[in-house]
Length: 402
Length: 120
Image (cartoon, rainbow over all chains, first blue to last red; front, side, top):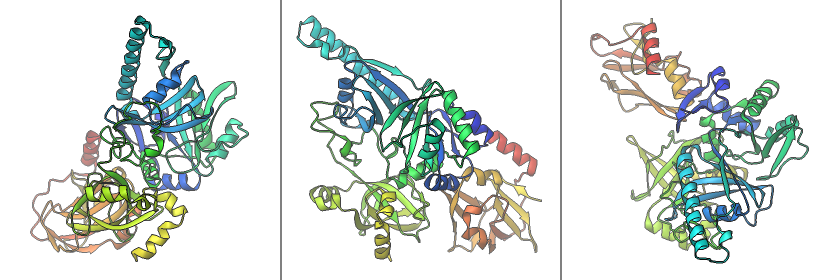
């Protein structure tokens, strides 16, 4: 059993604690709705120290990571992070990651807590494969063998470098003020800063669809930061429950629910983080397979249901066309939303061949789900519900649904 | 005095031989933010173990089971309209037994508390 850095704090706050992949994680403190609201309107803090963290360094670290993952690190600027996927040979997603580039020889990589063992095993397997290739290249006297695996260091820093997320419209100001950071970082930028002679990494990333930071530092420093900010500001702690609603509204996939090692990034709508023109990466030849396609489901406001993972989706002729992988109640839309994989070959074909549908913001096809004896209807939309609201498209949809 | 069940409902006598039924504070807390309360509108009488109501929260679904054969005589409309305010203190339905009450396998306050602790 593992404990996140705020475990004592969580007990003190009487958080509702559950086991999450072997970690004792808070689902909620004062209630999911309250914590959700704080994140969208003010700021909240999430203990995300359960995530896996690695430093990759050395002359060939970038080449190695670019071979392991789908996005392109070589063209990424120093001080920037990217979202990427780690694929198996069949193109399935072993995990989705964020990688930070300090310079071409130093990277911080973040993986999901539930996949930490699998990812660790995979990294070492690939590393050892390269090492053995390297020695055979060297023994065969092949020129340039040094370019393969020489000088790559992988260090699992999960225990010594903790991580928290502070998210919401007030988040950046609160942290800037606390850490004396003079600039407001732009999305997916990060800085290494020294504060009271201690090191912190502050990054403008998150999993809520809200502006905010993730902060990396020694566990004791982050515990103190959280205690100080919760005491002296409007910051409130938020748990996995609120986090799930926030990420679903933002249309972010959760590995294990919406993506897994049988799902390709093209199926999950993550082709934008696959640089298919890259010379080579694991899974390249199989990752564009599309036997299913991820979309959002928007239920009408009168449908009193929360769609759960595994629920089948039917079209107007009652043909099964897909299955829900995540569902929740969207507080901002005051209705149920879900992520769904459309599995019907005809629909997939029409989406793939019809470019306008792929880019159109909302596709108003009516579908339904059956829960218990009742039927609930929904529309298929692009999955970024929260962005749609800000773009006002949901109101257009509302008018049509009426 | 409230009597509790291992399925986390409580009942308390109201009047005329009827009972209020609700869910325990423990169950309400575990369920988290309830967003919908669904009533079994097409059903007028229930046998023991039937679902009387469905509480749908952000994270889970909870059924309120009939502790004995009964009919629903009154619904707490206030809580149905504002399910987010459910704490477990308030009654959800008033039910009337259809038959003379059998011996109920219920727990008192402290036995229920001990049961919940054990269940963890």
